[in-house]
Structure formats: structure tokens, C-alpha cells
Image (cartoon, rainbow, N blue to C red; front, side, top):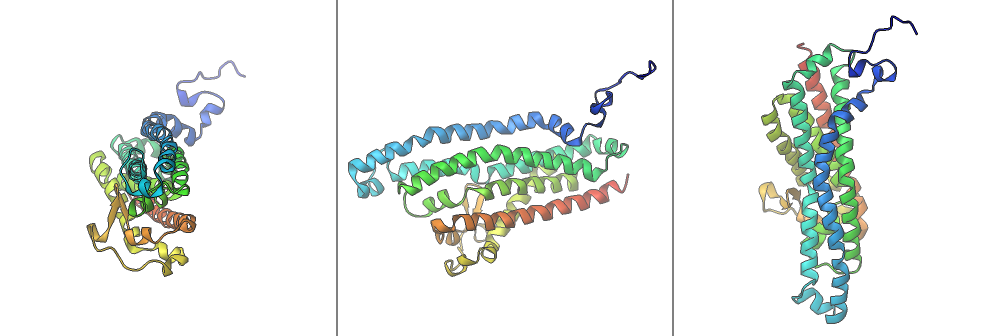
Length: 306
């Protein structure tokens, strides 16, 4: 090495591999605190699910003691009504809140890129704006999806345990608890990231993007539910579902903030779970892809002015 080698002047200009640090590693370093913050509510849900899992043993003991009729229709501690309500409450924090959180986080971070003019700095480097934002959105999507998976898995373990042992009540709560949460929950998180990316890129201001992103996420999810496009993907459901629910906003009902179609949900049987979840996930991911494409199109127009 020559004695005249220039000394490093900054973190990203160190000699060796550090000078070519991938954008992914930069984004991970910048968003590590975001990951820790969003992991806190996920950890809280996991702890609650683990604690409530013990209720199934109490429910089984009660049913063995008083009989199935009293267990389902009487009023006791740990009876069918109580354990089902507890499970539904646990699921309410997972059904759509992670998607709304993903929309808010992505929108705020994207808008801040514009407000802080970091995008202008990126344009002076060898990195294209498309790559700059795509990497950031992909890292956020990976982080938020990874945080969502553990509580979803724990919830499914718990609900399958209760459902399989016939410990839940019969009716809408049972259907919502069993069929709503699964792979589509993670797909909704990716939808939230895509909606946040579009809102942040289009509005370029933190406060408007913070409001617009979750609203857009909710509207897209509601449109997918109300359209019943899942029936076009999961063909066996055609013969089981009849009629639209007339109540609620534009004919929708809700499980917490998640738009729901009660006629569709109440028609499902255990064998329909994976078909329904996969079909719903495909539709949600397709919508997320369209929103991402729209965000990149807006980005190309925005950066053409610089």
C-alpha cells in the first residue's frame, strides 16, 4: 500500500468493503430502532397469547365437570363464552392493526425522505431514486412482516387448539376467530407498506401522509372484501355463499378495524381455511403490487423535476 493513501474521512468512505456497503445494510442500520419499536406491541400480543393459552385447560376441566350443554350455554368462569371472547379480543389486535401500523410507519418514513431532502442527496450519488426507495420499502416490508409472523403463529396454535376440542361458541365469533387470521394477516401488512409508500411519495409531507396511508389501506381492503373477488379465486366457495350483508359502511361488517363479510365468513368450514387464506392473500398481494407500481410511477415523475 502506498504511503500516500488518503485517510478515511467518514463512515461510508472507509477503505475496503465498507466503501461499497449495500443499500440494504444501510437501510437496516437506519431502521433498526423502528424495528425495536414495532416489536414491542407484537411482543405484548405474544405474551398475552401464551398466558391465555392456559385457559384451554381450565375450559376442558369445566366441560368435563358440568357437561357440554352447560359449558356452551351456561354461565361459568372459563366457559365457552368467556374463552371465545378472550380469543376474539386477542385476535382483534392482530386482524388489521399491524397493517395500519405498517401504513403509518412507511408513509412517515417515506415523506421524511422528501421533507429532509435526502432524495436530492441520493440523486447526486450513483444510486437511482427507484433503487433508493425500493430498498427502503423492501426492508420495511421484511421487518414489519417478520414482526407480525410470531403472534400470528401463536394465535393459530391457540385457536386451532380451542376449535379442534370444540371449546368455542357457535356463530360469528367462532368464525371470525378461526378463519380471519393467518397468511392474509401478513399480506395485509405488505398492503399497508405499499399504501404508505404511495401516500408518502405522492404527498411528500409527513402529516398528510400519516392520515392518508391507513385510510388508503382500509379502503383497498374494504373494496376487496365487498367485491367478493375471493370467490373468483377460491371457486368451491361459489356454491356455499349466498347474499350480501346489507348493514355497516357500504355493506361491510368489521372485526376490529378489519372489513368483514359475514355471509362469506359464516359459510366457511374447516376445510376451507387454507383455500380462503391463500385466495385472500393472493388478492391482497396483487393490490399491494399495484400500489407499489403506482408509487414508483409517481416517484419517476417527481424525480424528473430535479
